[in-house]
Image (cartoon, rainbow, N blue to C red):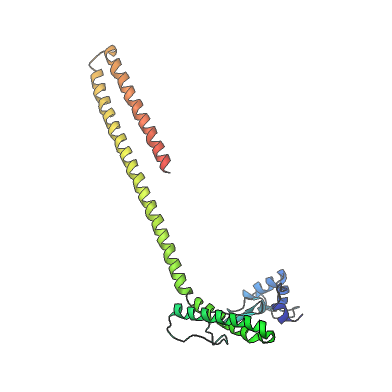
Length: 239
């Protein structure tokens, strides 16, 4: 099988030069690159410099027997050797597409008549239909940049809406958290103030008289602990 036939095969074989990339050859290439080998191509049937990556391709290249351009651009119908059925320059694409669709329907009906009356002359109509379809496809491809811009715009608008909603939700939770912290601080300050007052009173009264006040203070501290627990649960729920 020739190289051209291999390139056009549906399941092409790997290129023959892949056999050059052995461990020993790669080591020799590494030594050559660092200047530590004076005769790197001894015992090889090709220059070891060929193991280096080739420079980027410019112009066109062939993949699966198809020619592709390195610069991604839409070729004109003239460059593709196809007859252009609509005017050049700035056109009304919707109007031209409608004209081509009407021509396509007319050519198809004509093809049906030929297949009934003169079946051996269908080739010309098939070629005309193919040419019309290529022209339609080419006009549609000219919309691709506009389609890409609109798709990107919609994606950015969707992301902006999601981020705006997320920001509003974070602000709402931050407000709830701030209110909870403020309430807890107010309660804690109140208990500490009562504790200082109770300590001063204990110094002036007996233990029996101070016991109810101490029990009341313990109850207040229990309430603060309960509020702190609830505040931590609120923080966990926000996370």
